[in-house]
Amino acid sequence: MSASAPELHAAVGLAEIVVEGPGHAASIDASDPRLAQAGDALRALRRAITRSRGFALILCACDAPASRDELIHRLADSMPSATLHRIDLGDQDNDLLDTVAACCISATPGPAMITGAERMLDDPDLAPGFLQGLNLRRAEWPRQAPQPVVFWVPRRVLGQLTAGAPDFFDCRSDSIELPELTNLALRPFAEREWQWGVDPRFTAEERTERRKELKARIAAAAGSNDERVVRARLEWWDEVAELEELRGNLDEALRIRREEELPGYQRLGDARSMAVTQGRIADVLQNRSELDEALRIRRKEALPVFQRLGDVRSVAITQGQIADVLQHRGELDEALRIRRETQLPAFQRLGELRSAAVTQGKLADVLQARGELDEALRIRREEELPAYQRLGDRREVLVCCVNITRVLLERAADRDCAEANTLLCQALADARGLRIPEAEHIEQLLAEHGMSCDVADVATDAARV
Image (cartoon, rainbow, N blue to C red; front, side, top):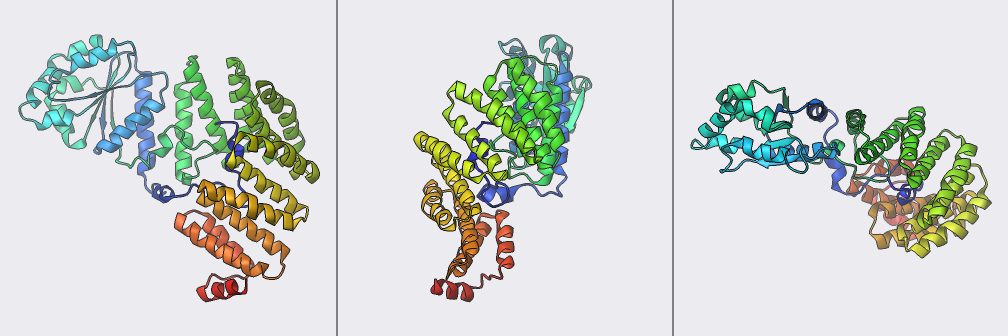
């Protein structure tokens, strides 16, 4: 995850980040047992491959080609030290061993994923030769194909395949069944897509499955010193730490950062990643209210490294994180100075419209905390909101509007309450349209202030405004 993560989608008065759009609603139902079944099966397959020494025959039953293809892709993602070879059987592949052997002696040997056997078996002219070839050359496979070989077939042909080539399939080491799932439902087993913390699209069950998947990957790659694998392992640890932090397990998150990630990057001599990790250690300490140590790490460990590397963006982000701690400690003047004089100008020079908008929102937070409500409201309306509108970010527009209502309700001048009611009702309609959890938060806010979104009431309030 990049060092810029905390700034890109800072929560501005609402709950944690949630992505917009229909994807969120499409997650697999939390009561559906197929998610755990897919996770267990995928981990079993990876174990079978990584523990094999030479040839190993594995039979995977999966009825949906789309699920099969996605699972093969996810398997490859989780094994950075291996090259998976996909062999799709066609009319010409009557003798499979020669094709697989060519992969095993290639410049990048690795496990072979065999697909399309059902097409051979469905053709009465091809099936006998295909099955006979497997049986007759069974003894040659361990020598010519010294890699794991995985047959992916639909359940309907399992009997025909194993009965037609009994000698060959008698030597299989594993038979694994995988459920049919959409690509979206297989997201917990994918490479990381969301780069700003835990993927907000995950249900609680998906987060649990993701954590199990990552720990299994780490265990499978534990003995490798290959730099690609080491870096992948450190990225997996980073995500596990975020999941632990979300579960409230701050001690384990801190242990991972200090004992797994930081020493790993030290051994690689990666100064930048060490500084990023120090910042994440400070994040955990800040969540544990250890503000003095969090501030020390940001000032003494992270910031000097980014300055030395000439990383202007990460310097600006770290300065903002220092301002966050100062704001928590009640040092509002210094927090305001850093945001105005250091962080905001840096993002503006970099042309970082989104990060500048987030910083404007945090400026407004400080001003509101100092009781400067008119200026806080001006920044929200004239600086922050137009930026999100230009970016086309519907969720952040919605969040900004809700934060505007907070200032209005605190200021409580003439017509402020009516305007706040109108804005909240508009935000509620948008949140429901996007199918994001902020809708519940807005409903609570309306209830707390005795407001209604009845069409007649809102129309009357809008007329007063």
